[in-house]
Picture 1 (cartoon, rainbow, N blue to C red):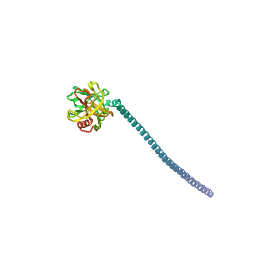
Picture 2 (cartoon, rainbow, N blue to C red):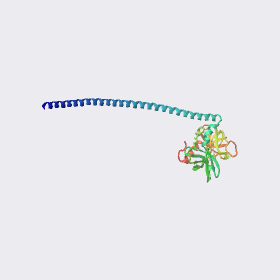
Picture 3 (cartoon, rainbow, N blue to C red):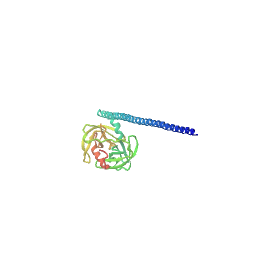
Picture 4 (cartoon, rainbow, N blue to C red):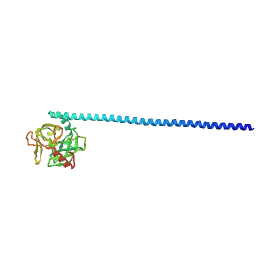
Length: 284
């Protein structure tokens, strides 16, 4: 009986030793696996960092390439615009105003009232139109026809009777405006054109030169451009334009039935008048 107990004890002891050895073996394996997992995580983290840095470098390079392409396209667009402007200027200086007229006529309007008819042109932004005061004087009804043959209701913003200027406005502001020249740059002999509505012939163009500057008008103001451009009833309020496409004056009156004696209020006075009427700086 005692012998059986001893054998049993040894068997239990052997099992305990075997279990301990198993725990030790499993622990070492787990430690090894944990180490491998940690190394793998470190490697993944390192690779992620390298990938992120590589991606950032690629994105930076792509952005740089994109910016360079954008700049090239922008330069090409500017060059094309400059070329078109230079082409128009070359046409004008050679006696061909077609390049200027093609752009300017789209900014000119025909004005009809129950009293008279005349011309005008867009100035500044938001649909503002300049014309002569006498074109709308005493009228109870008025309308504006744009170059695309659309009829617009018009609102009178204000008038300057002394300079014979009226500021009108239509709701549509999608039309381009004409720029006003510096009156100090006007020179006798410079070529100019008038665009207007003479005798109801809308958007007619006539050509001539500046005959004199700083002429005295009926209001006593020494601020009128004398020109030999043909002006007729209906031209009043329309622009007098130089070879660069800028407005040098607003066509105002002619001397009786005389030929080649037309007068336009100089552009600097037009700027002053418009800004006074609007009580703000619409044009510089």
